[in-house]
Every structure is written in C-alpha cells, then in structure tokens.
Image: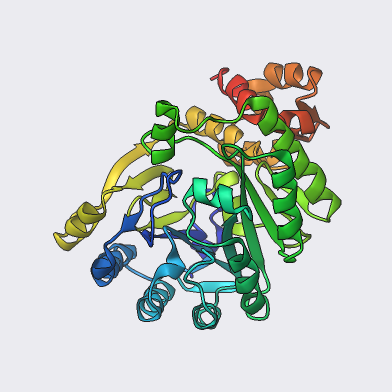
Length: 387
C-alpha cells in the first residue's frame, strides 16, 4: 500500500468492503433486500460476475473490515462458499487486526462451514435468530426452530467466539413478556453482541401487503416504545453497552464494519444491490439478479444509480448517520471531515433539542439522550430540516 493511500482519511479512502450474497432458501415476508430464491443453479455464474466486478479494482485493495451480507451467505454449499472466500480474499486482502464478519442463519449452518469461514479469517458471525417464539417465527416466515439457535452456538462458540445475535421486536401479536423471554434466552447463549431491530413494513414486501389487506395488524407506537426501552434496560443491566440506536455490545466487541457507515466513511460494495461510497460518490448496483450477471458478462457496469453530493448536503448526511452512535458527533472531527462547523449548520436546533432533553451537549460532543434515542427519527428529521 502506498504512503499516499495510508495517509488519506477514511472518509476518502475505503478501508471497509461489503459483499452481497443474495442466495436464500426462502424469502422472508418482511425482507426487502435483494434476494435470490430458487436460483441455486446460478451460483457459479453469480461468482463469475462478482469476479468481473472485483477486477475493476485493477489491483488488490487491503481493508480493515470485510462483511458478507445477504441473503444468507452460509446458505451456499461448501464448495461455492470456499470459492467465494478465495475470490474475495484475493482482491480484498485483510490488514492486521482485521474484522471479517459474515451473516448466518441457524438453518443450514454446520460445523464444517464455520470451520471453513474461520480458516479464511472470519472472526465474527451475525446469527439471525430474530425470535425464540414459534408463533412469531411463523409470522416472520423464518425457517428455523427456536432450539436451532442454541444447537448452532454449541459448535460456533469454540471456533468463532465473537458472535452476535439478531432479534426483532414489534412483530404482530408479540407481547412484552415474549420480548423479555427472547432477550433472556439470547443472553443465556453468551453472545458478544446484540442487534435489536424494530420490525418495519417495507413497501412491496409480503408483510406490507398483509398489513394493507388487514391480515396482520402492526403494533402501536406505545407498545414498540415499551419494547425498545425494555431492550435498553435489560441488555445494559447484563453488561452490553448501547453503542448505536439498534446495537449493543460487550466491551471491545462493537461491530467495526458498521461503524464505517455510521461515521459516513468511504466503503466498497460488490454484488447485486450493493452500495458503495468511494471518492465522494455514492453508487448502487442493480437489484435485478439476472441483470447484474448479464451486465458484467457483457462488459457493462452493474451500477444502477450514482450520485455525488454537494459538500453541504454531504455534511448534513454525516449529521444524520453520526447521531445514530452513542458517542454522537465530535465537533472538531466533524469539521475535519466535512469542512463545516457543526454549529454553523444546526447550532440553534441543537440548542432547542437539548432544551427538550433529546440531545446532550458538553461543548465538544453532542449525542442523543435516552429520550432522544426513543424518537431518533423525529430528531433527525428536525436536524435535517435546517438544510
């Protein structure tokens, strides 16, 4: 790596990369990601296309963090998974003290796959448990049973001890007692990290259509507030730091890759539907599985959308994502990154929100309070209105 590359700040020089693996056994009704179901015969063709896209780098680019998301990366048969790992590690070699994270579902995950991942440097797994209630798993269309999570953890823990458990709250019919039971059972599995997401009804998904037809009823905001505050209280009491709106970690186990997004730093993205932010330009690949393969085979770019934000717009975007972090925004670092003084953009709004106990300001850092975290979207909307 050149001295020039080493000296470029992380908001200009990507030090993180995301690889999208779209294949899944089933497309869950709430999922709005680019997913390929029933296309297992196209796995090699997809990796051929991914190789072409990676080759646009011209030379291997070392990264500090690497993340495989999906889809379900661990759904791949072990031969295909090994080919994917070899391909990506060739073009995106890992720096020392790296983080290499992979999303995994309890179903279809076995010891051999976990060992293969570890052999290629994977040192973090994100397990999509979502719930331990059979009825809620059915509503979410998950294809695993509650006991599968503990079974998987038994062989994951000795091989990749840094694992996260993902949970969803706000599922139709879910009660607070069920949510507390989900957290209790997850804590008993001794993860290093939790991601707790409020269920969203993304337009066009099956779950969204079910709500529109009246087949399912969304929980009210007050109930979801109770779920969220219960997560803050329960997980914090069990030694997990609430370091981002939806994420909790034991000391030293925050997700470094996701910090790239929350800091609004540059990052690579490869695969169908993948997003990247390089040299101040945001690009998004096509979400069409077949179009992604065809374009790359034809020597065309898979990019679907490209945008270079003006400096002021980029500064406001940085406000929106950095406030997701518990540390919030550090004024001097923000100025170095954006070229704008934070208070020149939103100083008055920050003062008003502090007066309503939604933000806290010590003169150097500004961050969400506990109350602010509960209405984070409204806080961000208020801040962005100043643009």
